[in-house]
Image (cartoon, rainbow, N blue to C red; front, side, top):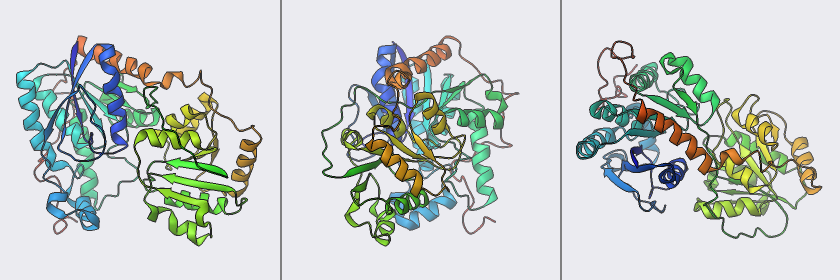
Length: 420
């Protein structure tokens, strides 16, 4: 068994959609000849910790212990926390990681982001232990569409840190082609070493039985991540349909949906439930008459839940921009009815509901989605890891990008008082 050190934050017991990709790969990697160990942050939460995976945890002194969480924490983090609110975890994680690599030899290091602080830890440990590093992107780092930079100095800090880190990466993976293309365009030295490794679904995950009751139910699972405007447009379209057409949002803060639903007089036609364990979310997907997908406005926008939607075998109504990774996936698998984020939705939604009721709405071809089963995707990941282990890539210090000075992780960004 080859040995893999995985640097991941978040990680169970913290409950987060960001843990799903890593946990699924950990489940299947031993079948491909890889023994993973995890370096992560100390955390609490309801998520089940994967069994039979060694885990080391480093302390997190920021942000909640210092600021108490809430809006004030969010505001201060935007100014001070570069590359993310867990920047203060980087130092303790590096110290813990050095202890690990001192007593045990690993063949490859893998880090997954967001959060980008995991990449900084991996870059330092890779250079310290002379172990090839694979940087995995679930979302962009410095070009992430939902990140708002307080100043140009903050934006430059993210860009320089990302370039500094990726100059030490042996290879990069990302969940879709637009992210890979963006990385190579901004960091040309990654050409030939950047791979698309999609998210997917896992047959090992069993849905719970769920009943939604009477009516035609359109179900959305997962957080909205700043897409409330598109949800409001969907609700306006929903309000024009017969009263038996209803919507359920699972894993959403009620304040993100309820005000618009009440304004439109939708009442109990719109229901909202808090975050639930994955088996229950999968059950809601299968109990639905149709599923709602709300993407962002950039080409790389594609929630990982789209693969669970495809496996559920339900028609999908997707709000997604032209040229998006989601639209490409739907074209490949024969699924999905798509509208543009700013397109009037009343007529398309009414036509979609009618098509579903009449059995005419497209659903995914089971043969076409087979590639996205986690066993197959882990085989793809293992092939990349095998190549790095067999032919370790070492960056030439004269060729790789660097800052004028090493990044100061103890003082990563100007304070609100001094930045301009």
